[in-house]
Every structure is written in structure tokens, then in C-alpha cells.
Length: 407
Image (cartoon, rainbow, N blue to C red; front, side, top):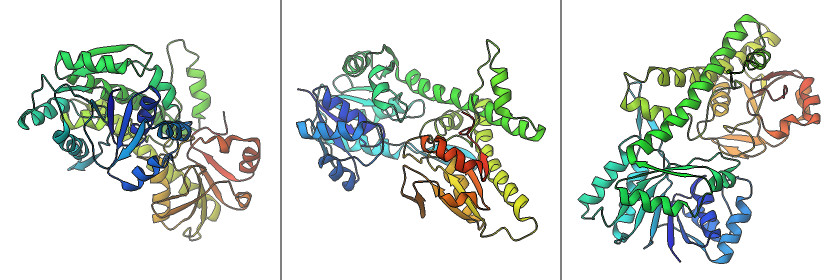
């Protein structure tokens, strides 16, 4: 039985670890947070994902999954740690510290024949840089195999996508690519495509940049339509009747660990040539602050010249997409934070998150929304689309920024 260490027990690493345990691998989940390690070893989960709680409990009970703070000797190491970014003089700079630390931590336990796969989203050239790091540590890259295989999953449907989506595998060497491809045959029924590591890295960034550009078009269109007094959703439905047009639905911006981040990895290395990608990012960021302005405009229309500070606003949703608990890069978080900072009394209704960064959430829409107040729907949670919720929201001054009431 091969031993697989999955480094990073987050939204990607933990489901992957549970799936591998189900497939008969001896899995060691590695995370720097002791609370996360203890939760997993007790058979529990610290994140929301359909079926994950049951999968982890079964994996731990079977003895095939165990979590730890430090990596140990294994046959395969899969890196699933975060890769955030920060801005330096308006230029995005990827932070690869977590990836680098993960590699540093496994170097002492690497043995000939081991396979290392990076799944974390990385700038082009990262795998080659890791290979150079391993070489400088005295490791033979013909004996220690290194590959890059970006995750391609949708939170809320991770197990389905882990087991069915096609995968792209880029090897530091051809032998590493083939070995990694053979490993992923144990995971997915989809096709596996072998390429070099730089192409695989760019493929991941390209996929999410493509999506970001398309979302930016929809968001920009929504702001233009608002100025023209046109219902953007009616317009989109009509335009999409064209056989070669498929405009996405506008929302309050773009969030999540991929689409809102990955395009910056391209921009950071190609600042002068990535004009469309950069512009799309800026449009989607602008849309979020436009939402804040529209909410304040609505409040002003109610209170007139009175002091608006202390006015109660109900914000429905805090996560970056429906029916999950993930708030990474969420535009809803930005909206709520901006409103609080401007002195409004904000009540956050969020079924999947109890507390976040000083903001306490309530799970259900309070009946007091029928009183004089403003409601902003920021996330399309299923709880907000029930007939009872619709009736309640119809009695309030409701701003629907994600089309929850029109579906």
C-alpha cells in the first residue's frame, strides 16, 4: 500500500486526502494548524463541503487517514497549500512562502523513487524553481520525481469533480510526468494530458483568467445597463438567444481562491502585455465598490437629508459563492466591511458562517426586514430563494445583486 502525504488540509487538500484514503492509499494529511490536525484525527471537519464530513469520518475510522503537523516518510507528496498575493506599487506579487516551506519540510524525508506533485496555483516557472531548490539540497531529480498538476474543482461539488474532471500533468522531467499521470489514474475517470511544467502552470492561470474576463464583461454590462435604466438580466437573456452568444450573469464582483487571484499571477510576470486580463480584474473589483455605492444611494433615498449613520442594512450572504462557507476574496466581505466602516448598522445573514473577522452572522432572514430598512442580496444561497424568503424580501427595499429573486 503506497503512502501519500497531502500537505495542506484546506478546501482542496482535505477532500483529496479523504478520496485517496477511500481508494486504498495510506494517507497522511499535513497541516501547520494543530486545531485542524486534531479535528481531522477525531473524524471531524473544519470546512463545509457536501459529503466531506462523512468521507473524512470513514477515512479516519478505516485507519487510512491520519493527520499530523510534520510530514513523514512517504511514497508520494502532494502540495495543496495556499498561494496568496500582495500589491507592491500597484503591481501584484505572488506569495510562494507556503509552497517553499512545504518543500523545505519534506526535503529531510525524501527518498529515491518519491513523487512530488504541486497542485497549488503558482506563477509560471515555479516548478522549475522548486526543481532547482531540490537540486541545491543535493537531491537527484532523476530519482526524486517532480510534477505540477493543478486542481480543477468547484467548491460545493468537489468529490464529483475530483473523480471525473480531466487533468493536466506537467513534469519537471518526462519520467516525472508519466509517473504523476499514472498516479492520477487512481483518482479520476477523466482524461489525463501530459505536458511540460510551465505549460501546465500557465494552463491553470489561463482557465481562471478566461472566466474572469467573461465575468468582467457581464459586470461591466450591468453597470452600463443601470445607467440606461435597462434590466441587465432581461437583456442578457435576450442576447443569449443568439446562437453564438453566452453572456454570464452579473454579480457583486468575483471572489474565491482561484478566479480572483490567478489572473494576477499572469499580470505580475507580464505586466505590459496582459492588458485585457488586468482590465478584467479591475472591472470586477470596481463592481464590488459600485455595489456599495448603490446600497448607500438606496439608503439616502429613504432617509433623505438625515444622517445616514446607524441606519440598518441587511446583507444577505458573506461567502464568495452560494452554499459554501468559504469567504476567501469574497466581494460580499468587502461590501459588508465598507458599510460598517462608514457607520451603518449591518446585519449579516449567512447560513454557513457563524462569525468572521469581528462580524457575527445570523442564519435566517429576520422578520424585521419588512420594516424600514434596506436589504442587499450578495450571495445566491438556496435559503434566500425559498418561497417564504421571497415573500419576506418582497416587502422590503431589496437590492438583488446576484439575481436570486429572478431565477
